[in-house]
Length: 235
Image 1 (cartoon, rainbow, N blue to C red):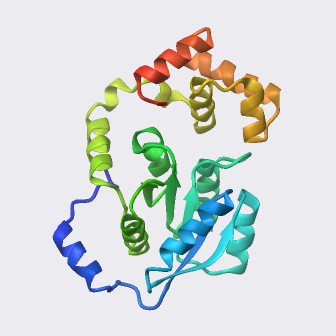
Image 2: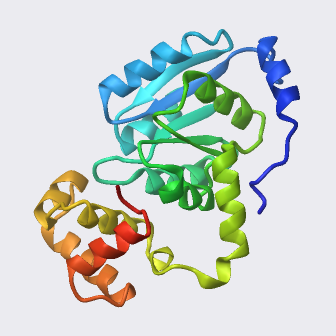
């Protein structure tokens, strides 16, 4: 798989311990997350890195592109969960308008749920919100150097998925939005709750639900929930 890289970890560590970076000057960051506390926390973490500077932030899809029109940045740190247009949809739009701009996905979801979809959509890296601060900084430096960032555990999962691609699970046939709706149904959320959280109409969510059931060859939510739990798509 193109985005799985083999590296000498010890050499990378020595470079980072010296505080060096391949690019001259500071790395300019755009943080895109709809939660103020998350953005403030990330800015506080990144202040510890002398070569990283948060120059702008955004709380929704429109603001992401507004800020990119005003500020030149080296990398976008993008949350995968947004109301309305999802982070994956924003990522695809970003790669169309700014194909060379690296995007690091920051997510509350475990790697095995959205990482593969993120890379297919053009992400340069995927990191969870419970990762150590040092890992976030390392990931930013790596994607700015035109490399992909994957954790060792994710690399193993990606390799395994590549080998077993012939037996693709049913949920891999879903679109990104359908997959998101599936996970939310499996978490016990009602159609009304999902519609409110995604800023979509109830009719739209019902349409997605119907498509999910059809593609998954199921007839009711209980089957979706059972499938999601068995395949570790939700806790």
